[in-house]
Length: 342
Ligand SMILES: *Cc1c(COP(=O)(O)O)cnc(C)c1O
Figure 1 (cartoon, rainbow, N blue to C red):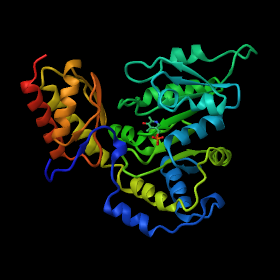
Figure 2 (tube, rainbow, N blue to C red):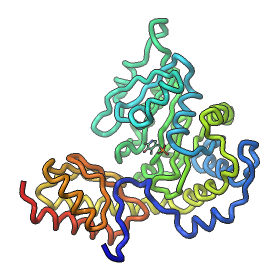
Figure 3 (cartoon, rainbow, N blue to C red):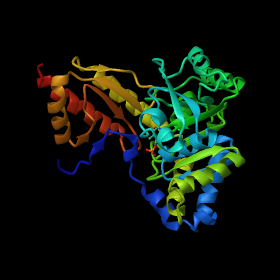
Figure 4 (tube, rainbow, N blue to C red):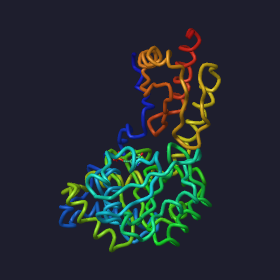
């Protein structure tokens, strides 16, 4: 591989901070955030809260931590939360809610569109009876596996939860993708959720960090859990500045990532050996013949393309993947499959 840069389609977490973002980081005014003294962290928290329409915000090192803080603040020991089988908080966060929060997850099958059926939500809420854990919370994820939850569904699911006395939390790691895709404001897309966790280090392009948004009293309680979980950071303004920059500059441009994903999926869809799902946002899936996986991984690497190759593989576009990179990727796949025989 000569002068060409790596094209990394494994995840939107791999983005590099831009020069302008690094300049904002270098210029950040900082203080000790455990004392509440970091002006850049405080500004980020206020800015994010206002942007999404919440009273207060809390900056933490990761989305795993903001989700866990939310779950531990909504639920106590012996409480339960309703969550999708495929949801990140249930499946990809090491069982933190159960291990560290003494919270019982009640996983429920996700529908093909990523939603949890309203009838299932209702059926899984436990009666007030000492045999059962207390059902306290419904947690949804948007986007989920790159799919957007429709606004009508979100409104119905959160209304149902509230009517049954449950709180609602959104794992909004990629909620900005969901908003941009639907042409909604950030306030509109989170409507119905008492709290939301937003990742700044995914498609928004910051190197580190997530924010938890919610009512003031909730965030105050959450701050105690954040400290206990090791998320109390000191001169965190250096990274909060990048997060702030990401929210200010990199939301609307997610449209480009969605267009690039669509173009990539269209190109790969022309290859007979592949079955490609149509992307809604920046993440999509394709089926690769099992025997092709190992040689394909090698062939892509030789072309400077990093991807998690598997018989069901995920491709992800982000701000460091250009339209030209998409063309290069389609060409690399086509060249491999031109010569490949099962
Ligand atoms: C990445 C991700 C998280 C967790 O974020 P980290 O910062 O990697 O801990 C939570 N939920 C979803 C849906 C994610 O994709």
